[in-house]
Amino acid sequence: MNTIWILDDEPGMRWVLEKALDKAGWPVRSFADGVALKTALDALAGPEDANRPAVLVSDIRMPGPDGLSVLAAVRARLPGLPVIMMTAYTDLDTTVAAFEQGAFDYLAKPFDIQAAVELIGRAAQSAPSHAVADPAQAAPAEGGAAPLLGEAEMAPSQSPAMQDVFRAIGRLSQSGATVLITGESGTGKELVARALHRHSRRAAGPFVAVNAAAIPRDLLEAELFGHERGAFTGAVQSRRGRFEEADGGTLFLDEIGDMPAELQTRLLRVLAEGAFYRVGGARPVQADVRIVAATHQPLEERVRAGLFRADLFHRLNVIRLRLPPLRERREDIESLARHFLARSAAELGVPVRRPDAAALQALRRFDYPGNIRQLENICQWLTVMAPSAEVGVEDLPPEVLDAGSVGGVEPAIVRDEAASQPWSDWRAALAVEARARLARREPCVMDELLRDFERTLLRAGLEQAGGRRGEAALRLGIGRNTLTRKCQELAIQEPDTDQFPKG
Image 1 (tube, rainbow, N blue to C red):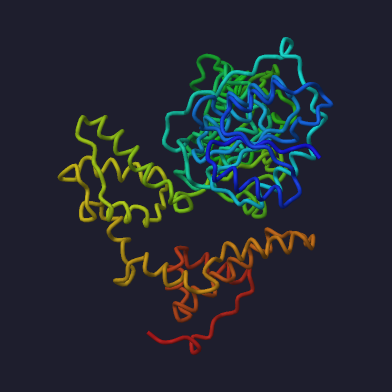
Image 2: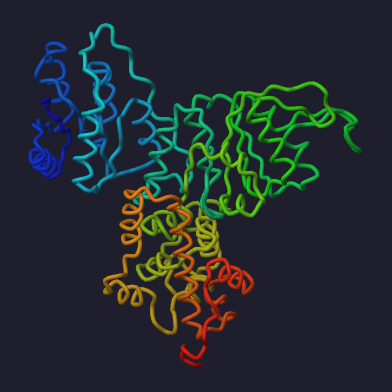
C-alpha cells in the first residue's frame, strides 16, 4: 500500500491526520514545509518506486512555497497523483485556482476527520498508476488563479454553504455545462454567474445579462433574439439580440421563472438546436452561447402548476447551485458588514463606522429577509445616520431594532432555551431521515419531505394561533388563501378550535 503524504506547517494538524490515517491502515509520511516535500519528490527514482505517494494532502497557506506552488510541482513530477488541498481561509480565488491546477478536492478547515479519511480513501482508489514525469519534458503548470471578483459576496467565507458554492465554481471552471442558480433575492446570483464566466474557458468572450422579470413581455422576445427592420412599429433598423451579443461567451438569464410561456418554447428550441430567428427574420442565426440561468422561485412547483415547461426545466437544470440566504451564513455577517461600511465611508468621504460588540451581535441576530443587499443598505444607512464612528445598538436602523426582541425576550435567549431541547437540531434530524429514505431507495424523497415539512409548519402555526387561520397565516408569513389551499392539498383537516387555548 502506497503512503499518504501530508504537507502542513501546523504540527497539530499533521498529528491528527497521521493518527486517523494510521487507524485506517494507511502508512503516512509528513512534511512541515514545501521545501522538504519537493526534495522528496526529486528523490523518487521511477514509476515503480515504492516510496511514491498514493495521495498528497496539502495545506495552501504556509511559510515558504505555498500549497499552489507545491501543487504545480507535483503535477510536473507526478501528473496523476490525487492532491487534496486544505485551508482555513476559503475564498473563491484559491478554490478555483486549486481545481484549475488539478486538485482532486478541497477541504475547508475545520473539517470532520472521518470524512477527510474517507475522501483520502476515494482519492487513492481513483488514482491511476503515477508515472514519474521527466522534469525536462514536464508541461508547465497552468496559470494561477483568476482575480477575485472584488465583491464581498465572493470574499473569503467561513460558511460551509458558501464554501460548497466556491468548490462548485472551481469544479465547473473547465466545463461548458448549463447551470441553474437558485436562491432568494439579494443572495448574489448574478455575482456567481459572473464568477462562472470569469473562471471558464469563455472568459475572453462577452458576459451578457438579461432579467426576464424586468423587461415587458411584448419586448422580451426582440430583446433576446433581435429583430429585423420593419418587424414591428418602431423597428426602423435591424438589431442584434442578446443571444447574438453573447456569441462565444455566457448569457445570464436572470429570473427565468418569470419568462412568459411562449418565450419558454422559443428558448427551448434554441437550446436544442443552437439556432434561432430574429423577430421578423427569415434566416436562421447561429450563436455559440453558454447559458447560466437564475431564479428565486421554486421551479419544480411552477412546473407542477403548469407555469413553467417541464422540458425547459430539465434543459436548464443540468448543474444546480443553491445560494444560501444570509441567515444561513451568519458567521460571515461581521466581515460583510465591515466591508460594506468601509466601502460606504470611502464613497462618502467620511470616517468608517465601527459597530461595537453589542451592535455586531444584533446585526448577527437579524434575519435579513433582503439578504446581502439588505445588509449593504443597512451599512449605507449607518454611514449616513450614525452620529459617530463608534456604532452602538441604539444607532441601528429601526428594522433591526424592531426585530431585536420577541415579547421582550432576546432572540439569543430564546434560541439558547430551544438548544437545550433534544429536538432543537432539526436540520441534523432531517439529514438522518433523508439518508435513511435514500438508502431505502424510496421514490420522490424530496417531494415527500417537503410535504411533511409544510404540513408540520402549518399544524404548528394553527396550534399557536388557537386554530384561527387568519392569525396562523400572519404568523407564518403567508396569505390566508395560501394557508387554506395548502391545508386542502396536504389533507390538514379544519382545526377544532375548542382543542386550542382561547385568547
